[in-house]
Length: 114
Image (cartoon, rainbow, N blue to C red; front, side, top):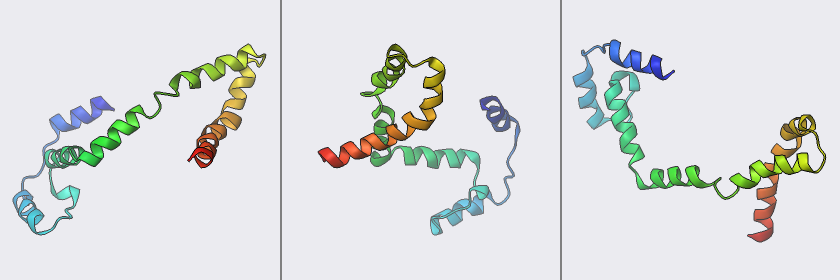
């Protein structure tokens, strides 16, 4: 996918007509159709949005929220095998039991301790 995106960026040329008028309209109208501006301007706007403090905080939270439980997530599979469940049974139970528990337990814990 990265190769295709790079190829399109390198070899596709954009129509220059209407680009200047689209940039002038951007000052008047905050909402601008992405097809009227170029790919470079689109990425500049995306980068500007990424520089907002709230977005940077969200990035940090999303990148680090699983770090404290990452070890236990991997160990629970090994403990299940250690206590006698076969790998096949563990693989079968994983989407049926462990996934809903992984969603429900934090919610319940939040209600109990919050």
